[in-house]
Length: 93
Image (cartoon, rainbow, N blue to C red; front, side, top):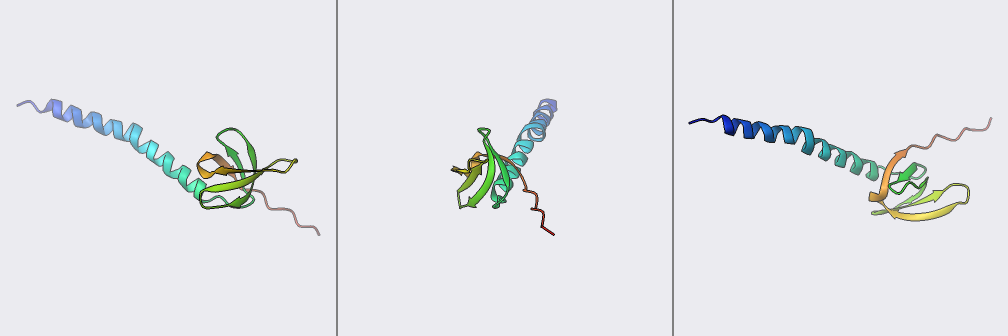
């Protein structure tokens, strides 16, 4: 019997796993960790492109403030694309 086709099939599945499935699962896990680590004061960008500062964090939603007009918007956590931790405010001497 020729087992080369079985070996080729296993090799193709391994390549599929390491080049497609594993990186996607890693990205999902990193995004979940990002969304669970949101804190008041973090600068965020939503998947729609809105940017602002987190004002409140709830179980499944966050409230963020957008710029100088101080509009507050409540969105679900999965809508957060990325964050940058806010710089600490300088202390007056």
